[in-house]
Length: 303
Image (cartoon, rainbow, N blue to C red):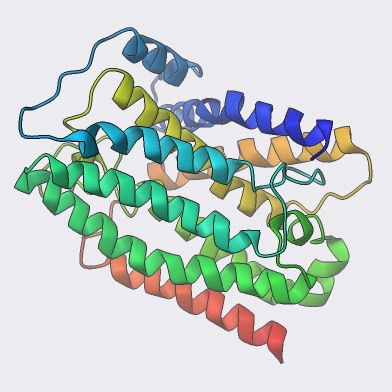
């Protein structure tokens, strides 16, 4: 663990909600609106933290623990992802498995908290969330396996910084396939269009949003902040792969990575503004397609 790693971790914790502001402003631009302030996510969380929480008499400690456990899991996952050429504070051989399963713990905490309400409405959303996540995880694991094979490292801190321009020249087609698969996983895991609509409240189309309807106050603030961090860590994977700037200067590499993060946020806003939400029966096809792309990339680097 180095001081620069801690600085980048602190920057991630502070800047993650800003990316959601960039996404919303991009969508507002395409809609011809001014849109909310870039710091609106910070304002929303600050307001929620000042409020009290209301709990149903049918819920147990599981409901209250869900947002806390989920936030703790994604905080730990953030510590395993490098930024630019700076290694992550938590780095060891095999941390790619820890990273994936920390995101799984976050999802599990959200799902069991939704089920603890006893609401069939939230149970419906939990069922959909688990089903789609089960299809997204193979795409993520196969993408990470491809990068591990190509770079010879089982650690995210050794894997992503090792992707350079020379790596793209040697394995360009495989890396393109992995990049596309990771973008699909990013959209699916963060409940974005075309997989889900974070702004919808229609019963027939809700997936993630329905699971958090009964949360309020600080609990909802934890969920919103955890979602922002999840967006950050998955976007970091895309940027680490697609922006192979490795100049050796930490400031220059970090600036390139920061620009890449903004570009990913803009890309998500463009996707949400130009594509329609898929029918629920079409979402599995999209996620299976991402898994096929990752598998094909792995075949290309193994041959």
